[in-house]
Every structure is written in C-alpha cells, then in structure tokens.
Length: 119
Image (cartoon, rainbow, N blue to C red; front, top):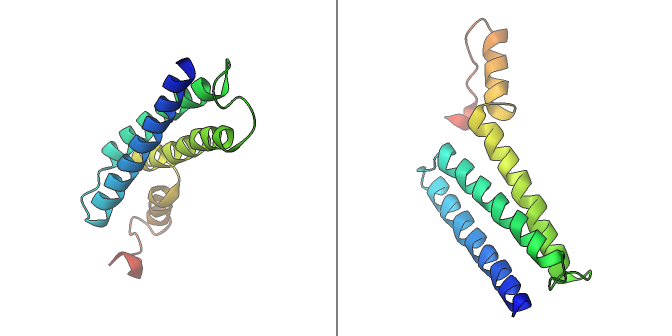
C-alpha cells in the first residue's frame, strides 16, 4: 500500500509537470506569458519533484534500486531545479538577456542597441 501511494505520487507529479509545462508553453507562444507565473510554477515543480525523489528513492521506496524509475525521479528533480533557477534569474533580472541589455546600455551612454531579432 505504501509503495502504491508513492508510485501514485510520482505519477501525479509527472502529470502535473506535463500540464504546467504545456500551459506555460502555450501562453508563451500566444504572447501572454508572465514571468511571475512562470517563476511560481517553476518553484512548485521543484518542490513537487524534491518530495517525489525523496519518496520514491529513499526508505524502501519503489525506486530504491537503480533503474528507469530511479533515474527519472532524480532527472525530474535536477531538471526542475535547473528550470527554476533559469526562470528565477530572468524574473530577478540577474544574468541572461536582461543583464546583457543593461550592460550594453551602460556602455553606449544610456542608449541600448536594438537587435533585429527583437523587432
């Protein structure tokens, strides 16, 4: 029963991750994405995958032995934190395109160069 509940949690976490990523991708392609919503969704997924990796791979969980289940639990954990880190940096304006445009603006005396791809 405990193993079944842990497997169910892993399945639900994967489905939630699939739905959340699909919705964020859809809104992004429609131009209606929000950095706050993306950051919050990234945080929630990182928390869900952290709990999932713990439940599935520790304390006689169903993925204590190395195999597909084990690797997918830990891959979800690491990927969710990588995504969360990237969207958090974008939200806070640290690194990436925001910092590069700020640096270009500072170098050009307050005038930022406009890239043709952004037009």
